[in-house]
Each structure stands twice: as structure tokens, then as C-alpha cells.
Image (cartoon, rainbow over the protein chains, first blue to last red):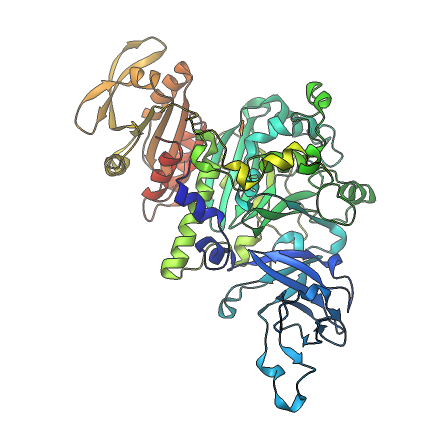
Length: 428
Length: 169
Ligand code: FES
Ligand SMILES: [Fe+2]
């Protein structure tokens, strides 16, 4: 349970809010590279952290992310002409470069210098790992570029997708650190999904639906270990890292690519769920890539031409009661990503946490909320930079391991939880 | 196009129609300090307002048989009263034990035995003191791992408060 004020604190991320300022300390993934595929391609509207922006790639390939609305009379620059190193408003022809600087006001003599006095707010936009990232905080605090492993392996080793999720970011992110739902909600998929099936570890998930948890603070966030019984008194551990504020990874299965998520607020009632899959040491196979494109694993199928899932609230998520009854799916919704999203959207746009009844095994979620609130307050009151900015905080990995009962995973799996170039994931 | 039911009911407006009746009854959370360091913490935290959580600063033992357990034990609360550990666990919904990192916490075994007997969830918080070493933390993890359903390493008193609040203790 959270008190009403606490719930507002952790869910509101607009400009000037404590959690909004916290998010503005980090690079956020906002677009796929494919959305701005070439120089002078059509501009794209983006809303992130409750700010409406437009992104474009200019004639020289420079990336720009600027205020969506023309400084003249407020037309959306999504209608703009992306040409000759700038975005020109189609209404009266004002033109802006990738930094938001106005470079042409056709009605005024160039010599008057009028254009120089007009500048739209802009944020840096960089490309890494097939993703475009922005940083929306004060320039003097610009952090090092994203060091996440998925964004730094060769492109042929990775596949990243995004989908619109129509609810607040936090209830989505909490699903990513809530290991105990897997044995219920996703149980039908462990042995069927091409990106999950066949792993030796799956049998422990299915045979032991009451895992025991160990939550350990990590410098950048948390490690949440879920332990199930394996053979000969050993434990099968699945370890999920959470890095502040909204990066989570799913523990691997066999040699399948590892995957995880980023949950980025669009506004307080919707977020972008980023889903990445990568293999640290090899290219994805055609089969794997095709399965991901086809919406398998943690990815989804889309309404054509959009990033909205094909199964969405407008069609009741294609609810299939027969499949639910037959146990093919636990909730009646198909696909791991949509199983999570449908339930999280059903909580309402902003989950009312004053009504929930948490149990002892929800401590991962309790701790994550606590750390978020503590970091947001420390930033607001003392200017203390939050965890998760350092490269070492970002170079984490999930792991699945079998350990003797007396070994703490935080030590025994220490190496496994660090992303090292050229070293494969530790998995069962 | 007609809106689906899911689309109609997931708006902020509709969220305002959640029934206003309570969906739970108060739960009995028992918080037990396993060593002197955590007794101090429990003492501080107990002074805040709680929904009926009970706080105990130590345990004492006596030889003698008790159904299902080998040891007879009492809990000592902050006012100096003692109560029967088995009865306290039996009437609990959730038992939270606090252990300072590196301290000997053999009493956890007794509590755990009773939690199993009465089918109660045992949550264990290991609280590292300032300057606690990895070895001390590991020792506590090893000691508590066989018993707790949820084992958390939590720096600072504020987390304990946050957790108890989250559990509606
Ligand atoms: S069982 Fe967890 S939300 Fe209903
Ligand atoms: Fe899930």
C-alpha cells in the first residue's frame, strides 16, 4: 500500500515534479532508429515525460528533438518540410534547425537578425543500438552515453521493439520486477513460446510455483533473486536486476537471447514499453529474429503502421475464454507481452495503490518504490544525483544459476550479473 | 466503431467508480528483533502509529517440549511484558524478523519452526550497521536463508518503516 501523496509522487513525471526531475537525470530511449530512417525523412511526433516534441533527421544526418509547436503561431511542426538542414513550418515558412534555433523568418529582412532571437526548446538526441535516446535534464548534468549491454552489442546480436502501453509507467515497471507472477500468468508460454521453450530451467519454474525471494540492494538499484528447488538440495535461482528508474531484465532461459525492458513515461497515463532481446556473443538466428518480429517472446504484433499492439483495449485484447478454460493461456490473452500489458491496463490509467494489499513476497516492489521516492526526494532537496547513472550501474545482466544452498547469489553469481563484452550470459 | 468494454472502463473517469468499501481487514503483523542492535530499531519504530502491529524486542527460551517444537520460548515486548511465542505466531498473519548483519541469530530457527507449524509467512530483514562488512552480511544471509520466505538486505530504518507501512502493519 502507498498513501495517496506517495502514489502521486511516484507516478507523476511531468516537468517540475520530483519524479519527473529524477527521470530527467537519465538518457531515455524514445524512438527506434527505423522511425527516422534517412536524412530529410518525415519528422515524427514524440511525447515523453509529458512534453510534446518533434524529432527529425536533417539533410546532413544530424538528429534533432525540439518543441513540437512553431514559435510563430503554434502550428505543429509535424506538418513541417524537412529540407536543407532544417524543419520549415508550412504555415508561414519559419524554419528551425536541429537545436531548435530559428534560422529563417521569411517575412523579416535577414539583416534584421530577427530569426536569431527565436529558439525552440531542444534536447540532445543520439543513436545507439538501433535506438534514439534523449536526455531532458540540465545540460551541465549530461550523463555518459547509455552503457546498457543491449544497446552496445553488434546490431546483428540484438532486436529491440517498442509498444504503446496505455497506463502509468510504474504499474508497468512493477510487472518487470514481480517474479512471482510468471508461474501463473505466463505458465502456458514457458513450454510453447519459441523464445522460451526447451530451457532446462523451465521445469523448475513449472514444478515449484512458490518461489522464495532474496532482495539485495545494488549500487544502481536492486537484484531480486527468486529461488526454486532443484535437484539434490540445490537451488535454481532466477535473478532480475532493476536499475533506477525503469530498467528491468528477465533472467535468461538456456541459450535463448536474454531480454528486458525499459518503461518510459509518455505522460502520466501512458508509457512506452521497450522490449529488447540480445545475445551477448552471437548474432540472432533468422528463426529468432523472425519470431521476435512476429510478436513472440516479450514482443507483440501491431496494428499495422503503428506501435499499438494488435490486441488492445479496443478489442478486449482478443480475449479467448476457451483457451483460458483449456489452460492454454492462464488469462485468456495470448502472448507474454500482452498478458502483462492487458492486466496492467486493467488497473486503470494510474493504479490506486491505496487499495492494494501487499504480501511479504512483494518486497521487491516495496523496495523499488522506496528507493525511487528516496532518490527523488534527495534530488529535490539536496541535489543528490540518483543511482543508475554510472556505467558500472548500467552494465548489469540477469542470470539463471543453480547453486548449493549455503551460497548467497550476490557472491556466487557476482560475475554472472555483470555484462562483459565477449562473455556469454549465465543461464540454465 | 463501438467502444469495447475494456476501452470504456479503463479511463481515469471510470477509475473514480471503484467501490469505496474496504477490501481487507486489518492484519496482525508481528515484528521481532533477533539481537540487541535490531531491538533498538524496533523500539524506535514501534513509537510510530501502526494498525495494530506488535513489536517485540527479544526472545527468551526455556527447555521443555511444546507440540511440534523443541523449545519453549517467550517474546518480550517493549513494555517489559512477556508472551508465548507460539501463541503470537499462531495469531499472526505475517511475522517479520530483524537481524543485524553479522549477529548470531539462532533464535530464527525457533520462529521459523513455529511459522511452518502454523503456516505463516516469515519475512526477514537483515539490517547492516554502518560499516558492516560483506562477510557479516553473507553470514546473516546464510543464517537466515533456510527460514525466510522473503529475505531482504535493507540499509536504514526508513526501509523498515516503508515495508511495514506497505504491509499495512
Ligand atoms: S492476484 Fe495479484 S493482482 Fe490479482
Ligand atoms: Fe510478465
